[in-house]
Image (cartoon, rainbow, N blue to C red; front, side, top):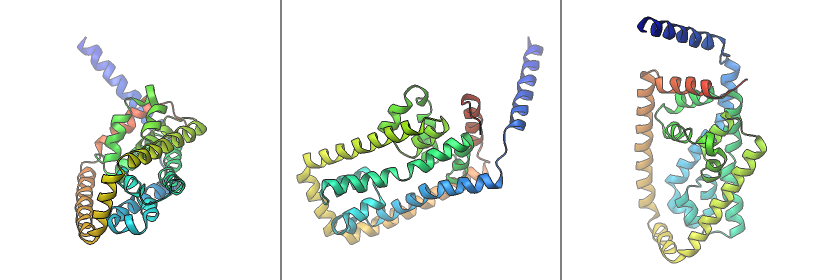
Length: 254
């Protein structure tokens, strides 16, 4: 039995080695295209930091500009008091959806290699990779429902890797986006008094809030860079194993 197990392990290793040898390599042209597809989501992620830093003065003076920079739930709740419904829905939906087709296409074209590429760029233990680790366990059973509930960066990339139909991806994503905006608007109307007082308080002390947010974003950036460098020194084994596991599970031809 021991000898048989050794033979099986050797055979499995040979099969894995052969599979690795026959998989298409990522060329320089592929890497450049991945960088172009990722440039839009990364660029808007950087703009979100700008909106996070300057949210206090922008929330009362230029709420729609703030929403175009950062569309997280706290910002949505604050802006809902400062803009008409049609503008809130139009700008909010555009900001939330504009990056998603690029992530979907990145996953669709390059499959698990796109995941490994992002793990190398952001760090194997970055939030986007950790979120994908959690979501991937449920995606085969309820992918469209997860996309509707949380149409963010990880779900859009997973939808592309799983080769969800493009029309279904767009339909479910937009439905989830507009549902989220409508729910935020309803909550903002329900708690208009307390939220209005909070917005006024933030506007009154916008300079201290801006300084605090600048410090917090700086600390967060340093921590992220430190984690990325630690993952790079470790050789990102998590990303490599994740890519190998996805290739074995997902029938993907490029």
